[in-house]
Amino acid sequence: MNTPYLVAAPPQASLTPDSVEDGDFIQLRQVRKAYSEQLVVMDQMTLSMRADDRLVIIGPSGSGKSSLLRVLMGLESIQGGSIHFQGKPYIDGSRKHGKPLDEALHKQIGMVFQHYTLFPHLSVLGNLILAPVRVHGLSKAEATEKARAYLSRLGLESKLHAYPSQLSGGQKQRVAIARALMLEPRLMLFDEVTSALDPEMVTEVQNVMMQLADQKMAMIIVTHDMHFARHIATRVVFCANGKVVEQGPPQQLFTAPREARTREFLEKVLHLD
Ligand SMILES: Nc1ncnc2c1ncn2[C@@H]1O[C@H](COP(=O)(O)OP(=O)(O)OP(=O)(O)O)[C@@H](O)[C@H]1O
Ligand SMILES: [Mg+2]
Image 1 (cartoon, rainbow, N blue to C red):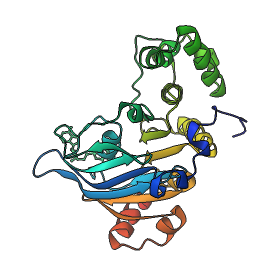
Image 2: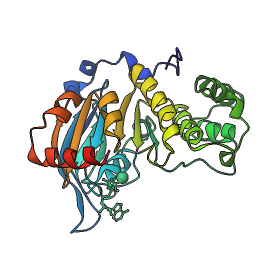
Image 3: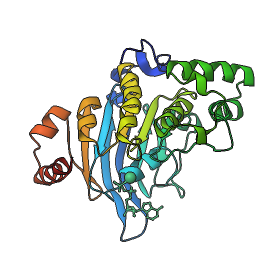
């Protein structure tokens, strides 16, 4: 795709991994997440990410991929371990609620979900400016100008006053991405954002994500699309039973997985493709 410049370079573009203590942008340290005694979805999970990484998380259904993103987004608590973000304590599982400690850090994470989460009663513009005005204190005029700029870069300027019900699935997801970008996140989380789309709309959304990748946006992406995973990832992380089983560059993980469990999973999903 040739759109020259999709979004303003994210603020971390100049942040080299070394500018964060011990080189890590996100660090999960022995994180435990359990919905009940029997249902442990993160079991002493350890994982780290650099500011220029695009992690793609793969794993069996029910292995806790969405839970991991929801924890990072502050939507779920953890029961043990800790998470650091940009070298600072972000979530601490020893606290009763395990929710983000630092609201300023929390605001630097944006998330897009599988099912469009646009507010149906608000126009595209209304969806885009709501949080910037309410949470970040931008004036309506400033936020509107910014929304126009994002939508135009996404080829959606003609939809400014449309309502979500008047958009295609691919357009809705692109608006959802634009809405998250309005808050100038340093990290974007994507949870199966193309799974509910018709095939012809998948590409337009993936192209937007590729453009963000070109601009070095830090991303954690959960997807069942192994072709896309291979294309966009700097590192692929295979999780099962609450642990990272194996991780590596896509080239290595997809062609020469080291663990039998990874091979088994890949054989299954690649056959289905
Ligand atoms: N709020 C919740 N309360 C109780 N159990 C939950 C909750 N959310 C998820 N779970 C359970 O935790 C496990 C992990 O769920 P999660 O959605 O994180 O898996 P996933 O890897 O994203 O799966 P999929 O690939 O199907 O999307 C599942 O067994 C799920 O039923
Ligand atoms: Mg999921």
